Structures are given as structure tokens and as C-alpha cells.
Length: 232
Image (cartoon, rainbow, N blue to C red; front, side, top):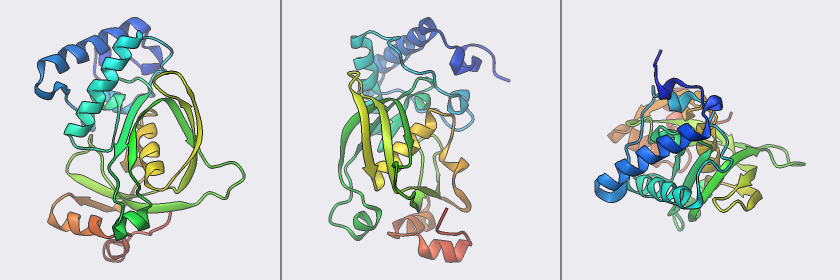
């Protein structure tokens, strides 16, 4: 098993260790072209930890700088979301932004509007109270599992709770592709990768054939050919 700070269960990370790790990340970003930091890959302990809740371990300036680094790293990848564990920091923080796919068949089927940049702190999600949960299945990938993609059944609509980077409470209903992004990034904060929820028979490389499967608005042909269900 790994030793050192990375092997400490996230629930036991004291504020001093969080500040130390964030300081190292900010130093690395300052020295890097574009002000980004590396994205860790599957097998890194931070991706399998339950992130420690954010409760003011960082001052406002440091939190803002960390959010900036995460935002630049996400856009440079490029991706539509990035959770702190993906940069080796098991802290309950994630950034999201998606240009969307408005005006396309895929965008309509997947309900993929533009998602303006936002920050989630200590997020949680679940079915919308009083509504029957509906799951939809589409291909997705992950910046921490490069080169692969798989079909994942996810809630089409969910209730999101938590706070933003300014401490304002969040309690809202999110639907469609933004809901998928929320689930993917929040799962990272609980040590869960998308592959843990995927139909593994749908797993494909992000090569020419994989691009064909992923280009379908709904992965019907892939389901027939590779032999996986389209529902959860």
C-alpha cells in the first residue's frame, strides 16, 4: 500500500495537511505553462478516497486561487468537469462548465444545454422528492481514465444540494446532461469512478470505432453490437 500523505484516509486529513497540499498545487500551477496542474489517473489513492468536507480550511484568497487552477486545468484538458481528487486533493470541491450541444440531434436527445461555469462545494445528489426516478444511459468518459469510454445509466433528473464557493446554499433540480455532469463529479468526491457504474460490455477505446459509438445521440447500435442494455 502507498505510504506518506497520499495514503492518509481523507476523513483524517487535518486542515494543516489540506493547506499544505493546496500550497504545493498552487506552486506547481504557478510554475507551469497555462497555470494548470496534472490530472491524476485511475490507481491514484485520491480517486478512491471519500473526500474530506470543505469547512473553511482555506482562506478566501487561497480557495479562489485553487478554483482558478481547477478551472484552467479543466478547460485545458479539455473537459466539462473536474473534482479536486482528480488533481490529487481529496477535498469536496468540484468545478463544472459545458459549452453544450444546442441545435444538434445529439444535444436534443441528451438534453445538453450550455452549462455556465460553476463551483460545487460539499455537493450531494439524489432523486427529486415525490418524482419517480428515471434513468438514461449514454456514453461518458473521464479525464482520470484517459483513452476509454463506457455507457453509464444515470438519473435524468436530480436534486442537488450543497453550497457554492461563496458559501451560498444550493438546493435545486438539475436535469439532462448537466445532471450527468453533477453525478459524475460528485461521485469522484465519494471515491467512485464512472466505470463503477458503467455497463462494462460497452467499454471502448476512444479510437475511430469508439468515436463512432459515442457519436450516436443514443447508443442503440453500440448496445445491439456489444450486447449491453440501454437501461439501468
